Picture 1 (tube, one colour):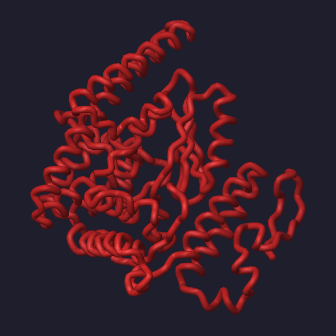
Picture 2: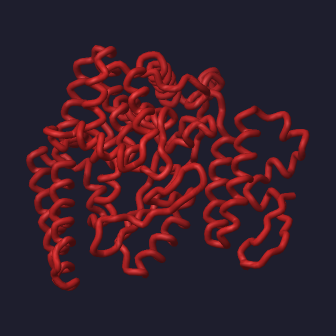
Picture 3: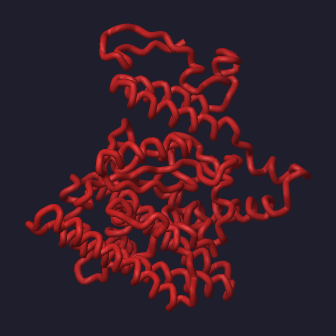
Length: 408
């Protein structure tokens, strides 16, 4: 049993809740003896999740219910994870799955040996999620602003989205936000990092990726274990994206596969074109919202900008010979929330890649400089990155962690 005080009704009282209600049926069913027999990572997971449940329970029903589903979803992924070595040794494992898992093992080893990313149990186990995405994120902005609503949590700090393990829950949250007049973007996420709190398994949701995108995603998620600043999503995601981009170039170079490198270059050209288009549109919207025009005039201007975006994207597709890998960004049509998440991942990437070059393309030295940046205030960190970015084109490829449809 687990006691929570001041839960949901706002009064001071003690409420005893079975662990099963927190999504821990397997712990409650087998009791203390089983709890002690599981691995260190799962015991740590249970302690952390119970602590976080308590903290969010103090915020009332909405916060408690949100975190309950997050805790239950995370524990389910950990409970069902199997060592990749065992999956590969199983004669019943489908050949296509075995091939992808072997590739993932190679990528994981490369990440630690060449990129000096953490050498731990992350991505050494496999979980068949049984759905297309592991979570669905919901991000919202005001109708006439590009600034996202933020949500703050223990340990992770404040982030511009909420993640739901069930699509139906995400859709309910998105609908409620839309009823408030907000721009909302709901999108599926194939993987996420728990920042080293848990040993993240490799998920079935990423195995449809091509080799380059699978490598990029693993590099990106492992990079979050190297450096993370609570409340500074733009820095966190840009750092992980910079590691991902530097890492994939090294990975492809050592593979010595001319065709794979050609596919990568083509994909980068497309990503760069898409990102320029979206960045230009975001700048137009920002300029519009900064004017002193009446709200209705801004709404009409916004509509015109987004219609122009749609036409320009169709032109871009024609230049690509009809390639439609980014159609997902236009179904439904993009709004302020779409541009907000792109800014989170990419605006600071050029500065961080320049920093990597300044450190002689040495990952250990680069990570040391990154840790120095994390020790600064956000204002100081932003100023340093702005200095690094002077004279650089604002250009970077969308991260494998947020891209849609571009599976090569």
